Image 1: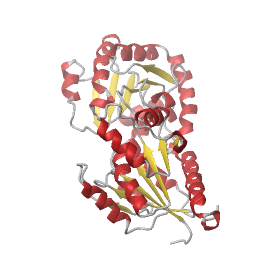
Image 2 (image 1 turned 120 degrees about the horizontal axis):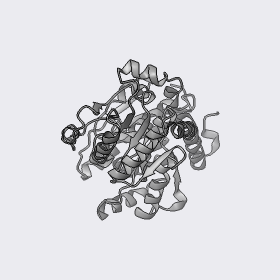
Image 3 (image 1 turned 90 degrees about the horizontal axis):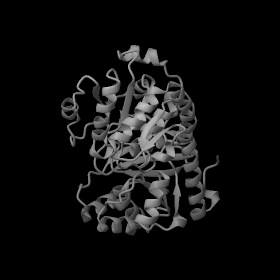
Image 4 (image 1 turned 90 degrees about the vertical axis):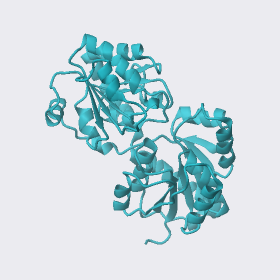
Length: 381
């Protein structure tokens, strides 16, 4: 163990499927290990990103607190934080902030950072009060998008002077040398000439796939060969397969579940679609932009931070299958417009590279700790 490194404890609900979870895992793995020593404390369970994090030499511990908001949860996190040495506690997602921030304060950990990855305007008042109350224990608060920052200010009444936007990001190197469209389709055994739409998102009501399936009826009526690929974990909340069959789309819609070959699927596609009803900042759209795909998505949350309407894609109102179908058909009819948007999407996607955001957060950790302890205690660059 190298002496003098800044010790960072990331507190998060889990390292399972999700944009915040992927971001946190990528962030920890890309830290300069000569200057920083990361570790994870997961509230509920481990998850699919744990093996990769551990392979990078980063410890992961599961606390196993209750899903109910009960006093024992605070005691459990406080107790576990007492077993580690930390200079910085960086929480991801609301529940992690609820328990991690007060516990870190009581453990006298110098720097405490909360990171919000979504807005929850529909939350009951008592949960907003809890969020606002624990924020007082934070040294600073981060929001993953402009919209989430606005929710923190207006919905949770976070002090503006303690709040800054740091976008979600991912490893864009996976999208640098993708095969051609035809090569990707041959590899995946997809039809060479059919229009292919891809939606990468958990199969939940909030992601709006039911509206996309309704839109597919109009798309299929005009372009019977069009295919829709739904990629993501099925959380058991909606029966999309039954709905596709009911709408006569059984052969046009493929529900693929979670996939490790998302870059290849995007390389084979014509348009990325995300019909969400609410979002933080969706990494799936960052990835599709990096892959050079124009997007059709809704105007919610942080989506406009990633998709520039009319430039790198088309934005439509949430919950409107007619608008979705019109936008998708418009792009499918105009190959030249898709090509121009594809180039713009690559440029936009580059703003969300994990290396850039990691360097920004590294400097934040250093500067905040310097203010608390003095620069003499900090590791050299």
